[in-house]
Structures are given as structure tokens and as C-alpha cells.
Length: 142
Image (cartoon, rainbow, N blue to C red; front, side, top):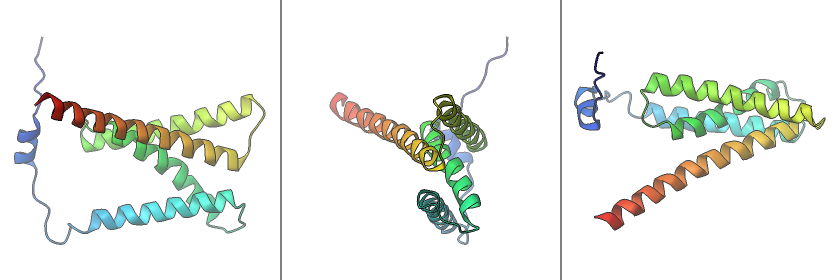
């Protein structure tokens, strides 16, 4: 049987290349743009707008909101694995919401957007609460 080598946080940091000066500001800018697009998509869906951007922006929101919440819970994975698992989890969450709404004959676009928003928020809040609980337990233990 072959042993699997696990890298610690210190060994990962030593191997990681430092970003160049041109790449430092890109990640927060992309995160802000993605948040804006997702927020606009949710608002367009909830207000029943007739804008041609409603479909793509709402689809982006329905994939990005749960994917972000799930990615926050998967901090230990490699970046590519984390991305893949979070997007797959977002699709699964969206399909479960759609199936549940269809099963009880309460399908609506607004209801789906609200349900996905609530479930994503609950997942994200549970992750944040777990991290805060872990910090307070470490403080008390030391």
C-alpha cells in the first residue's frame, strides 16, 4: 500500500509563487464585479424585469451564490478541486430547489431565487459561525 503525502500549510506557502505587481489588484476587482453582476441578476429576477440581461445575470447568480458558500466550506481542498466541487454543489443545490418546488406545485422564478438565496446564506453563515467558534475555542485553550 502506498502512503499519501499530505502537505502542511507551511510547505504549501513555501512552494507558492508570489504574485507579480500587476496581479495584486485583479482578484478583488473580479470579486466585486461578480458580486455586482449576481446582485443585479437577483434584483432583475425578483422585480420581473423584461431586460435582456435578466436571464444571463440571474443564471450567474443562481450558480455563483451557492458556489461561493460551498467554496467557503471547502477551504482544505486545492483551488481547482475546490472550484470544481463548489460549482457541482451549486448545480446540485439549484436542481434540488427546482425539484422541491415542482414536487409541491409551487414553481416560480421569484421563489426559486429566494430559496437559493436563503439556502446559500444559511450555508455561508454556518461556515462563518464554525470558524468563529473554532477561534474562540483556540483562544480559551491557550
